[in-house]
View (cartoon, rainbow, N blue to C red):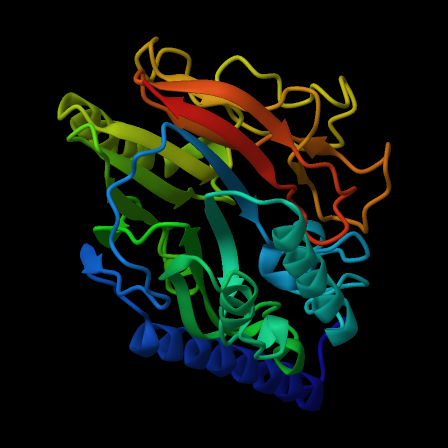
Length: 364
């Protein structure tokens, strides 16, 4: 059956509108794409006197706080529907949930004392968290700590879901926040290598490390590295570029005699750890790669709590025993750092799609 001329014209007109819209989206993304420098000095936002560390035992917490938008009640459209439309999934969690999640994180910091907090996905001015300056809120609660902020996600407008421009993810300004009971001698943001393919690259995170150095009374430095490696990375292709860079940097520091502690959201399981450990055989279509066995020297040690998950998948709101969970948040320490205790702080994912991991370690 032949299509009538008016229908043909309407269809061509519709396709032209869609084409012009998508072209405009990508042109705007290209023109406003943030390209950070390789190395940037981080200026502390809260100052303490520079002190030579005399203690030997330190407590660390790493936690991806999920920008306040991925508590137990929330799902995330990208994990469910993909980039084109939202379906019945959330693009933005309602503001009361974001505020609830932020309060939960602030309460946690008051209850679980640590010497160092390594936080990922901390928003300062993002549409997904209603412009709430979460970093300032954390600084107020952790007022006795030195703090730095390393931006890793600046985008004027994330256009997904692409077929719902009225419901777009919008502006994002987010990064890694690090808090310490001592003032770091130096702090830098170090850009990680590896890029997403175009056009995704314009709207994705620019992954980085936040590297902090603390002098010790042993004449060496304690080097604390906050990290958040690539996600949405089929086949771990980008992480295969990031990991050698991370390993070489860590080994260089250890060869100087320094103590090295890396913590964060690796978006991979530790070596040998089965990604479906907590739900064997019930993978629900998910896969999670491992850091390759032997990739780091044998005398380097991964610190994680194998009895509890650190990450839940956000295709649907969280239901204990039903939602797929795994372990991708942990620490790695150099041979001169002894792991004394490590524990995942179980929260039933009430405030984020990740759970905090607490480490007690001793410098040898």
